[in-house]
Image 1 (tube, rainbow, N blue to C red):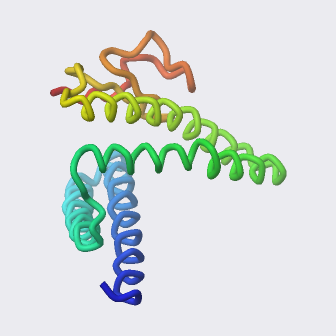
Image 2: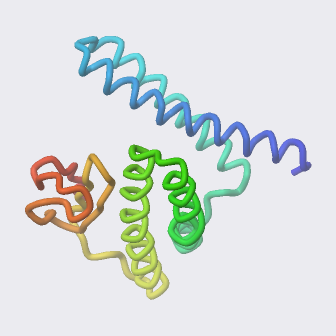
Length: 169
């Protein structure tokens, strides 16, 4: 692939990915405001943006086998834990941005867990095994992630366990 096309697809992937997430956030707000049909529109178009992003990622060769994908996911989480969020936290502290500090701290603490989960999953996949889990629970406030049921309160942001989102096999 030629350099300009590759750059354009990378930029398009980033833009489509951001649009997908932004529209899901807009859908949640529309639902909260009582506009169910507007929320439906946002959700549908968010899905379309996801389709675009995945198509671009495929063309870029960004989806490999499960081992490669776990390695890429681990690398991304590791970058966030070791470099990105610590640097962002320093800036937020220097600028006394309390909300940004909280958001960054929540993300950093959750990303550490994600990094470990990907590392362990890759070890199992490399050995030809799947992870032994039937449920993954995620805190809707900070992203804390745990296999199975969460503890009584989130250890990062103190949200009660009943607020967690469950993903079941």
